[in-house]
Length: 335
Image (tube, rainbow, N blue to C red; front, side, top):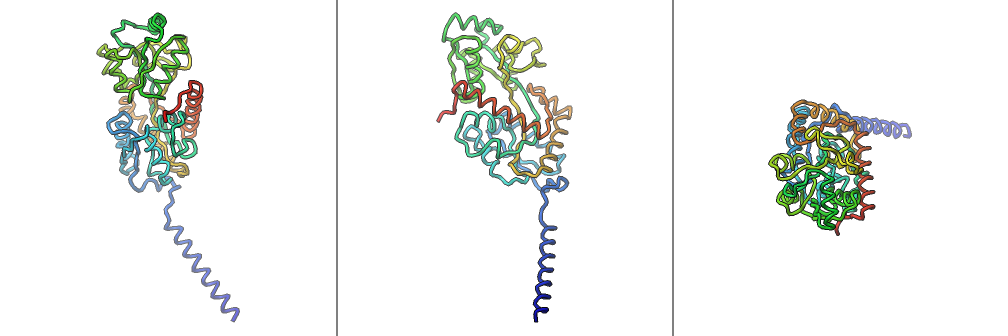
């Protein structure tokens, strides 16, 4: 009797073993790069459609989908200073099919300002690839007749507290630059917050505020070329190709003014490394194509192709830098 029971148990164990093995063969294996992707990928843009990030996501996604042989769907999820879109991605499955396209505001500046977010910018995301990098220029209202930064500082010192520095909102990059300029140049100025860079730059062009900063995609063709504003310094570690005669802030004796605008792709933490590696490799191919690189150059952006680990170090370093500035200047998110 005992031998019959033992035999039955052995047979059952064998059947169960075969069932488990069969299930393992049928289960998806997202960690293998050669199996990815096998369905559409979603790029989440945490801002409104029609903006710079949205335009880049759609053009970039269209080309990347050709290489991956799967559709890439761009989904706009604006709100809460871009943090709603980031929160959605952070809570999505870590399978490589939902990614955050952007990251500069969502994972660096907003968290550094202690905004009430529901995700951890460091722990909840895996950086995949950074592919654009650009720097803004400081511009002054053309009607002031000022052509250089020293002239602006002289004007401000003669009129304490009268210089109006436009910002794209409380806690924006421009807000920090205004405060940094006041300290570095030892001048008194007033910051004027706007709801975005569009109205800020328009009011600089019309003279409602005296100075502001803008990235070339926003300010060059619309305001600099028509002569409505005058560039007086570039916030970069070196001069930029568009304005080779325009000095950097550092060259003029004002250190620490480097301000980057960059675009990258992030997936939820826990996404298989093979998927991250595959995406990084294909993204690198796209941004190195001459046509795509030339298109980016028109908007003042340069192509960068770091590895996922290098991009991780970059984003973590940027978060730490903005957090230090936030504490130093006492600029926090408005509650």
